[in-house]
Amino acid sequence: MDKLKVYYEPETELLTIFWRDPSPDQLGIELDEDIVLFKDPATDSVLGMELIGFREGDLRLQQLSSVEGTG
Image (cartoon, rainbow, N blue to C red):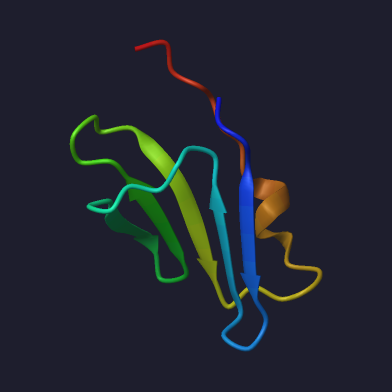
């Protein structure tokens, strides 16, 4: 697993988390009106996610879980 990369932009309230290196041709898939999943189209692997409207004390991070695939 690559190093976890976390970017927070307080002015725009964006929290972006990558657990794999971003891809120049990555796809952003809107899971909800405020959650975007980033995938590599070549491998279909999940690279990271973005939380829109993120503020201190946001409970969405507590609701996330990830399972690393074996394929």
